[in-house]
Amino acid sequence: MLKKVLVSTVCALTALSAFGSEIIVKLNVSPDQFLEEHQEIKELKPLVKDLDLYLAIGHERAVLDVTNKSQFSGIEYAMNNDEVKPRMNPNDPELGKQWAFEPGFSQKGIDATDAWSITTGGMNVLGQDIVVAVVDGGVDVSHKDLAANIWVNQGEIPGNGIDDDGNGYVDDINGWNAISNNNSIPKSSHGTHVAGTVGAVGNNGIGVTGVNWNVKIMAINGSTSNTAQVLRAYGYVLKQKKLWIETNGEKGANVVVTNSSFGIDGANCNSSRYKAWNDMYNEMGKYGILSAAATANRNWDIDRKGDVPTGCSSPYVIAVTNTTNRDKLNSGAGYGKTQIDIGAPGTSIHSTTPYDRTGSKTGTSMATPHIAGTVALMHAAASTNFAVKFDTDPAAAALDLKQLLLDTAKPISALKGKTVSGGRLDLGQAVLGIHNW
Image (cartoon, rainbow, N blue to C red; front, top):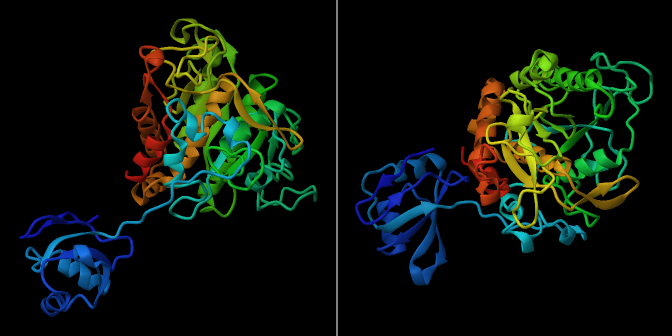
C-alpha cells in the first residue's frame, strides 16, 4: 500500500483506489486551471460542484506520479475512491428466529451484519475454495438449504466403485463415513444443525442462513463411536488437505477448519492416554487446519476437571463455550481461564435439521459452528497479504487467524476470568481485522 503523501495545502494523499486510476479531489482552483497544471490527469468528472468535488482520472502510472508529488497545487485535499458495500441482510424467511444473526439482537449477537457487508463467503482472494469439515454424526447433504454449499470431490466419478482420485477412499463424493468406512453419509439431526450454522445457503429465500452464505461443507461421520473413529475421521480431513497442497489445488480440499461438537468429559487430554488427540490436531495444524471444539455441557471448570478435546494443549484447537441471548454463560456449559478460548451463541439456536426442516437446539455443540463458520468467513474476507502467508506458511498463518479471532472477541462480564479471551465472538470485528491484515 502507498504511504500517505502530505500536500502543501491541507490534507494528505492516501493510497490509490482499487481502480488504480482514480482519486477524489476537492479543488481550490477552476477545473480548467487544474487540468492545465496537471496534464497527467486526463479527465475531471464533477461529483458535487457545490463542494468543488471531482473525480480525477488518468492512467494508473500518471495518477501515481501525481499523488507522489510533494506539492499538489490546486487542491484542498485528495482521497481514495474507496469501494463501498451495502449493509447486507439475507432474505431467508427464518432469519428472525436466528437471534445470533438477526439485527434486532445485535447487542447480544455476533455482529453478522457488519461482517456480511465485507463478505458473505465464497472463495478467498486468490480464487481458492474454502472448506469446513463438519466432523459429526453425518449431514443431510441433500437438504434444500445446504445442498448448494456441500463440498463435492471433483476428482471422483459418483457410484463407479473406483478410487478415481487415488486418495485411498472410494466414491467419497461429499465426505466420508469413518464409522462404516464408506461413502454413505447419515442424515444426523445434530450434524445437520451444526452444518446449517456454519453454512446454510444465505439469501436464497429458503429457511435460515449460516455464518457463511456461500462455503464448502465437507460431511464426515465420525463422532458417535470411539476415539479410533474420530482419528479416522480427522485422518480423512488431513489426507484431503495434504492432497490439495501437493497437487496445487487440483485434487483434495482446502480445508481451513474442522468442527468438532463432541468429546470426553473430565478427561486429561495432555496425559499419555490421550496423546493421539494432540498429535492429530498438531498435524492438521501444520497444514493450516484449525479445529473448533465444543467444551463439555457441564457447569464446571475445565482447567480443573479436564476435557477432550477442549483441554488439549495443541495451539490449533479453538475451545468454545455457550453463551445466551443475554450475553451470559449458559448455566450448563463448561468454562476455563486457561483452556476455554471464547464464547459463542449456543442457546436456542435455530438451524437446519434433516429432510428440509429447521429447528432449535441448545448446547456447546451449537456454539462451536459459529466459530468454525467464522474461521471460514475470515478466510473469504482476508487480505492478499494474509492469503499469501497462508499459502506459504499455513501453520503460522492459522495461528495468526486464531489470535485475531480471540483478540477481537467482545468482552463480556460473564466470561471475564472464565475464558482465555474473556469475551464472546464478534464476527464483524474478526472479519474486519483479517480484511485489513
